[in-house]
Amino acid sequence: MVRPFARAVVTLCLIGVALAPFRLNAPVAVAAAPPFTLSRVAATPDIGYTDGMAINDAGQVAFDGASHTFLSDHGVVTDLGTLGGAYTRMQDMNAHGEIVGFTTVDANYENWHAFVWRAGTMTGLEGLVPGGVSLAAGINADGQIVGYAYPRNSSTFAAVSWHDGIPVRLTNDYGRSAAWDINDAGQLAGVGLPAPALDGERINNAGEALGNGLSPDGHKRDAYLWDGSTVIDLGTLGGDFSQGVGLNDRGQVVGYSRQTETTSANRAFLWQGGTLHDLNDLIPADTGWTLEKALGINNHGQIVGLGWQQGIGGGVFLLTPVGASPSPSPSATPSPSATPSPSASPSASPSPLSSPAPSASPSPSGSLAPSPTAGPMPSFADVPVGYWAHDQIGTFAQRGITTGCDVGLYCPERPVTRAEMAVFLDRTLGFPNPTNPASPRFSDVPTNYWAYSFIDRFAQLGITTGCGGTEFCPDRGVSRAEMAAFLIRALGKPQLTPGTPTFADVPTSHPQYGYIEALAGLGITTGCGTNAQGQRVYCPHRGVTRAEMAVFIIRAFP
Image 1 (tube, rainbow, N blue to C red):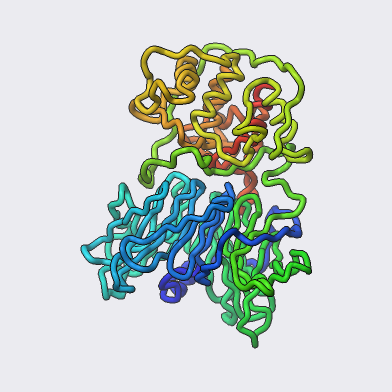
Image 2 (cartoon, helix red, strand yellow):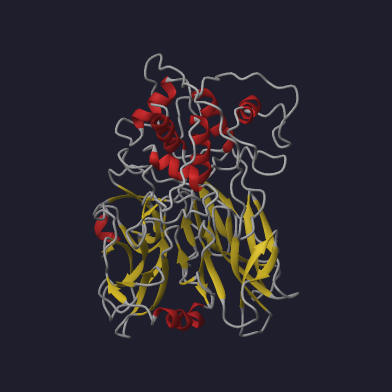
């Protein structure tokens, strides 16, 4: 999105970029742009026409209205409110539907204050000095928040991260540094930051940064994508301007551009495979829509933005690729989403920039046999024939591992929580109804918790020791790194520790290196894709959906 004070920052961004070699429209490993179905996001009459918008892998859409920010969760729209003033502007939303940005705290429009919105509550984030200005710009799946702050009426500002609501300066003094985004590995994008941070406004989990600045010929102000060594100029739709706003983990970029150098009208674009596509050419001709700005894209390729619909007016649009399942085909390891189900509690608080690794637990002694297949193949209304994981989900239910998430539904795109993971693996290992222990093993899993007995058995089997201290964190999403550890322990297999890592984003020093290598060695995963250098990556910090978990477990216990 176009950041506040972006014009002051662009030149600084380009200082870092100018030293790197340029590639013009270099290809990435993504298929040709698909056609899309188009719909209007529910109940969006109050549009602010800012670039504040995002969509996560669960399909939640956050967007700025005329004065407030809203969250649309599958048709249910929530006004985030303010901290006492009249305006709120969002900057980012993570996989759990947690939103950060800035809001006014009184009648003074200039009195901006950083905030994080979690579980229906907006919480202010302190500035570096009393009465100062602060802005939260990025939040990752672990709840780590970054942005910048500065004294009121100052022309200098400093990049910060927040720990339990308290700002920590990321540079030594005030100057012109800002942290715009943070990925799930803790890598930053911004300006004036030391390496391994990258100049840019967005950064994905493959370590690619998206920014905006002058093109190599110094004429056009183009969007660019880079990995710290090579810059890809995304070009324009024919005019003298392009603005990249949204970036997903597949390297797809969305934004807006002018078609000619004599018009000020914008057209929404999708960049992938080395080509900039006008999204208006990829929707049905009879919709009546003109898509002006594409502002967010998730890992399933769904796109949100602003447009104008004939006879109705402006609004937020949602594009979904035609014929493309929300996740890759079964032949490849599914790419995850990291959003908890609506019924699950979000993370309690943001973790520090160097977040602790998932809990280490001893491997169970010996491999336990999975439950036998029995009964007819069940069907779920939200898992149609042709859905990429249809067969595995059917087998999952046929074995009695799941009965779905509701009557006749499986909720395949909802993330797996740690509690659900315990239930799935206990049942897989032949424990469909564990005995209730007399007293709780974990302080956050009381005797009346729905998965109480399963979580206790999960620990008895040595698959987990919890998430830290005396807690299990039952409603927290499961990361791909944690999943690897859980599956390998459940299988009773040893860790593998080759001298050369299989995945570029899982070095030998990674706490779950041995489990992830073992998972790859058993053929249960091939990773989540490739990075800008064409190296295989695993995306250890990303979460796992219910569909993906079914596939992984069926692969592990065929």
